[in-house]
Each structure stands twice: as structure tokens, then as C-alpha cells.
Length: 543
Image 1 (cartoon, rainbow, N blue to C red):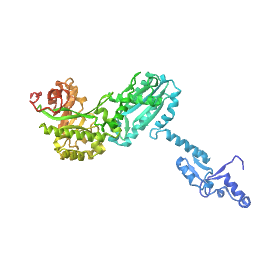
Image 2 (cartoon, helix red, strand yellow):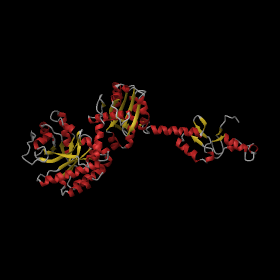
Image 3 (cartoon, rainbow, N blue to C red):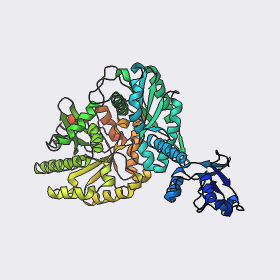
Image 4 (cartoon, rainbow, N blue to C red):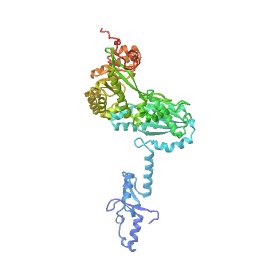
């Protein structure tokens, strides 16, 4: 027997294909008393194959192969294995098999399973050394977030969402150059490490990412359209932080630039200007201060009047959350709520607001000015919680009728939860509480879903009412939304009305209520003005 021969593949053995190893052959030939060679003089290879011979196919996964090896008796566990493939039989050592398994584990640890791109762990492990040996003036990071991706999951399901992420992960490398590295950070967030790229080059790559994200994603017969917002940070333009590594500082600036792009309209490339203050620092400070704000009663509710357009009187009082932080100024609800949701304090803030709004409603009733007080609440509370029960308890505690309160739910309503949402709204209605949806015409649900919801009012997105007095198309669109609201048995309301020309058109367009700076000028700025003479509104010409 050749000294280089480790084993022989027996393809037609009595029990099918098997491997006769050199070790097993020598064991047979030596025998217990030295008579093995004589005993097996007439035996064929198939008869010498040991019972622990292990045969794998190309369909056997590495995990399955390792499990089969480990199930063998310890004395034979490390014997060679036969692999049957299209190229013929191959002998595989157990050490080779576990080396491949180890490499597979390393790949899985450093790569995203869905997209195949390297992951955040790879970036944290390899990124610092990469940045340390590159020119900061020619090193950039793109921070990429898919706009409105949650709507895909809520509307078409997580399978469609995964398909979109996998397809975008396949498109992303084509937007970059050979030496650049695309990364999936998690969820719908991606990044790209650009080496040898100047500012214009990084912005050009970001523009290609925008184009790739805007192409339709086909899934299940649906053509899904999304967009992306990309933050760009150049290493030489980022101020280092003693508490952060250069990589973390660069990522934070790019993330902050992306968030700034989101705030200014999404679907854009946002850069960090040289010497610009850390765009993430404000958010981080808000999050830190939030931890003690409730304990210190640092929040404030401000109120503004709501105009009844039909009769010119005051219809309600609209509350808004404000918070002053030294050094940062006023923190509005729009800035606070995303931070509160991430830090799991949204529910605590919502309960605080409900208590204060009920207290305000009771005060107005005692003063003979019993206007309903309007509270903006997160749609997450409506979709996942039990607002009807909590509101009932608050109303009882303050001895208020349900009509003293109106809830406007902000944010998208997930279609899979629409029946729970409808049940909660019906229960609120049974208590006499008016309910409304914010941002109608913006992110709010399909008309088919709205038909199921017993709402009192739809608040049209301010983006659609801002130009009604200067743009005929905008006025026609706003009017069609008001008509839709009436067809559903609901009223239409407009907010952020700042000019008399806007207010003049709202009655013609079929709106029921309005609020904003101009309304506050007419009715009084404190949101609790006495009912005086009705405000004159423009009556449409009957002709």
C-alpha cells in the first residue's frame, strides 16, 4: 500500500458508498493476535469497510456534517470522511471540515445574513485600523437610511420588507468603487466606507445611492417605491471627541447629517460642513436630559384656540408640548417624540400629558369656558395599547365628560392592527371622546382602512394647506381632501394657518376647523379666550 494513500472510496459496497481508510485496513490486517492478514486474504474492500464510515454529499451543510462527526464514537470520531460530489468522490479530513466550519462562523459573525454585506461588528472590528492608515482628507462615510421603509413592512408584510432590503443590499455595491466597503448596520440603515474619495466624490457616490433606492422594488406582483436619505461625513472635517474613537465620531457625524436630511424633507444627500457643530450632540443631550425631565416636572403644555369656521366662534383648545433645556432652547414635540420612543419613555410622557390636559379641561369648565381640549397622542399608543381604558380613568379622576377631550393620533397606523385600532376608537366614542387623525394626505392610512375607523375629524397635512391662497392646484387638492373627509362622515381641520387669505378659503373648501398663528391673533393667544363676537368668515358666493 502506497504510504501516500489515506483511503479508498468503495462505491459499490454492501451498504452503499463508503470509505475504507488506511487506519481501518491496518487494523484489519494486524488483527488481535496477528492473524488478520491471513483471515482477510480473500476479503474484498467492501467487506473491510468499518461500520462507522461516514459519507457526505454536496447537499450536506457544514453544520450537519459537524453534527454527524460528533455523533461518532470518540475512538473513531476523527477518522476521514468520504465526500460524494459531481467531480467524483473525495476524501476529507475532519480537521479540513472543521476549518471550513470555523471560516463559515467567522463569515457569519462579520456578515449580514439577509444581504451578504459586512455588518456593524465587522465595521467596529476592522474600521479603526482602516481609518488609521488612510488619508483623512480622502476618507468618507455615507450613512444611508431608507425613507418610509416601515410602511412597506406594515402594508405588505415583513417578507416584502426583507426582499426590499436584500435587493437594496445587492444594488449598493454597484454605487461604489472597487476599494469602497458597503455595510448593513441593521434594520433599514446602511453605510459605506469610502477610501480615496474627496468631498465631491463622496457626494457623487451618495447621489448614485439615491438613484438606486428610487428604482422600483418588485415583489409579489407589487412595484414598491422607496427613497433614501444619505448623510456624508469626511474624516478631515469631523471634530474628534475624547469619548469617541475616530470611527465612532465619523459615524456619528454622518448619522447626524442623515437625520438633518430627514428633517428637511428626506430623499436627499446631506453633508457636514467644515467646522460644523456635532449634529448628534443636541439629540444626545436631549436624551440625557429626558431621564430627569419628568421627575423635575420640566415639561410645559401650551395652548392655542381652535376656530369653528362655520360660525366664527371658538371650537376647542389645542395643546402642544414644549420643553426648555438650558443651552439648547425650546424642544418641540416633533423633536422630542422620536427620542422618547427610542428611550422607551413615550408612554410616561403620554400619561403626563393626559393628566395635564384633563386638568386644563376641568379648569376651563370651572371658569365657564368648557371648550374641548385637544391632545396629540402617538398612534403607537392606539395601535399597541389601551387608550380607551386609560382615558376613561383620567376623565373619571377629574370628573369630566368625554366631550371635554379630543385625541389626535399622530404617525402611521399599521394595517395589521387596524381592527384593534377600530375597537379602541369605538370604545373612546362610547365615552363621548372625539378622535382624529393627524397628517391626512401625508402618511395616514388608505381610504379602505379609514372607512373602518369611527373618527370625528381628519387634520389635513399643513404641507397641503400652506399655499391654498396662492396656488389654485393646492387649493383644489385641499378641497378634495375636505370632501373625502365629509364623505367618510368626518370633519376636516387645518393647522398652522398663518395668513388671512388661507382662512378665507377654508370655508369655501369645506373645512370645519382651523388653528395657527392667525387664529390665535383673532381669538386670543392663550387658547382660553372668552367667547365674544363671532369672527367674520368669508361666505361662499351662492352663484
